[in-house]
Image (cartoon, rainbow, N blue to C red; front, side, top):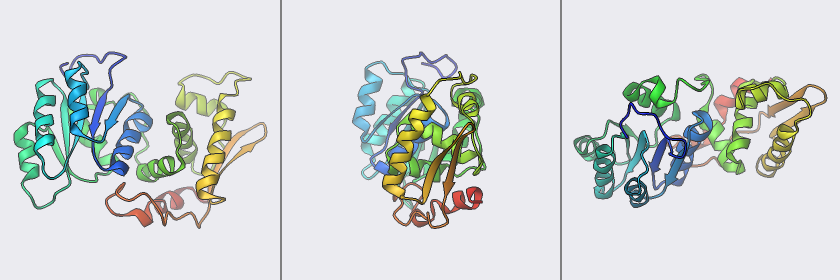
Length: 261
């Protein structure tokens, strides 16, 4: 599929080949929750190669370049032959891997692990806002995307639950009504009596409590909506390594400065 063509509903917007689990899950969160685009993520280049050869035509292919880089470089060439925008992640600083990735056809090469906002903006620079997916979603660049992704990953939230948490975090400690959730997630007004968000929040509350205890909580405010609070002690001392380039212990701190009242 050429970059200017429309993507079919059964086709993923992006394919990800990344061996590092934390980085791979962060990228999956970026596409599916933040950009609200379909993505398929794999731990190896061979699985993504099989997707391409089976007729999958994504707009974006993200490739982690490990050592040795042979498989990743082959995937880059294959993806470019099929018209995809290829974003390579260079894990081996000080080597020629970034150069080789560009020579293989990569549209861009970023140092891994890459910040989610940085990768999103790099895709926009290569594809434009519409084709990259940034135009159709409502992005908050003041939010801490890594902290949100880390919370979702460690709590084991589903895609739908992660989207709810993202809205609650984004409201900076204020009550979020069911209608606001519906407008943000479903792009339509909330239907009175619809308990979908009540069900999501009940599951989210249990998962957050299991991992974070009382440090992160979601409270139902009668006749109003939901309120998410993060305690001062909720510094991610056991944060997922690799999500933000070795800054594990500080992942939640930017979130705390924004949302604790």
